[in-house]
Image 1 (tube, rainbow, N blue to C red):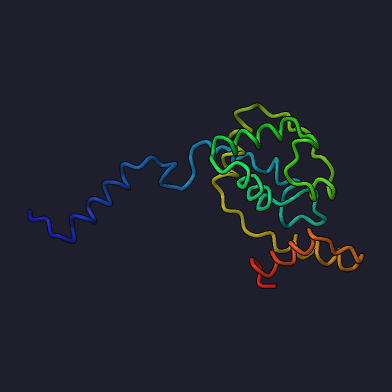
Image 2 (cartoon, one colour; image 1 turned 30 degrees about the horizontal axis):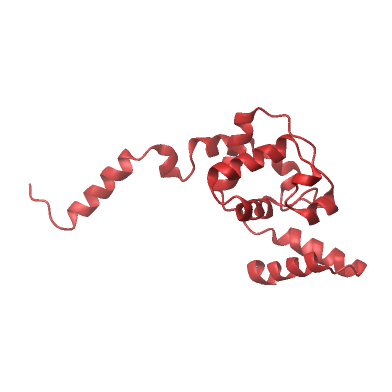
Length: 162
């Protein structure tokens, strides 16, 4: 049997796909897949569509933590440490702290928190357009348009086309 120039790359790709572990082929590591099963623990408060909001959406949490902790290990450790023992001194998100207050500690085993943090790290959350829209509308009604609300307006324009 003769292998043609076009058949070889296709065969090579097929071999690579078949030899790739399922977690990589599906886009999430095993830890993140386990975290995905547990993320509802977080989305009770951090759901972008929740009205009224109880905490910042995961889109914002992830992006803020990535700026401080761009590599996976430090990101996971920082999320785990925050969730275990939140404090004003450790808060990276000052405006949500002012808005929603300090979140309660999450009494979950370390491996579960690591898995949840891995899922957050590996997931591209959609922009929380409804959340931003609500914050901006409420601020404009109350006349409290500060720097944070101006940032939310820019986010609406940039990510949501509003």
